[in-house]
Length: 180
Image 1 (cartoon, rainbow, N blue to C red):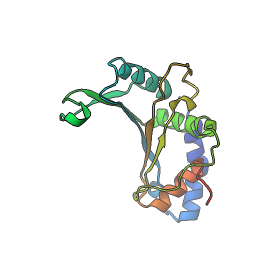
Image 2 (image 1 turned 135 degrees about the vertical axis):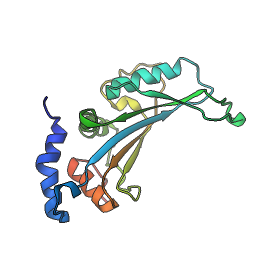
Image 3 (image 1 turned 90 degrees about the vertical axis):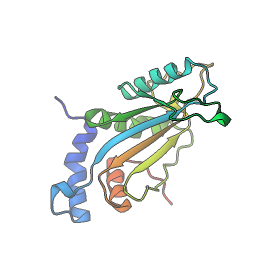
């Protein structure tokens, strides 16, 4: 089985560079990307076939069938009842994760109009989250005139212990961070 290009880049370039610059003595200390989680929510007032439409488009983007999240309790102000579908999420690991990350970094993010980079703020534990307001930046999505945009959160979970380690890992992987 062939290694994904980004995983090959991680093993051949990122690991030696991090060991040299960050001073890791053991190869297992070097931070790695553990998983990528894509999450999108829908309004309770949306039509019933909307969840199937979102599920189909997330499957096209990730290559993996997402799960439908359901409301754990009723909230009357949002017209939400317990058990109603209120979102869709996908967790990517292994080769699928590296393939998705390569498409995100090389194709999707540069397709955003007036793109100047992403924020360099991590969550304090070396993990990174990015919000995308329009899913049509991915080439797998055909843009129609009557289609609603889907916003999504993309969380990249790393094994890094600090923000500095996570930032160094993501920067070497090719994350286009905004220059201050």
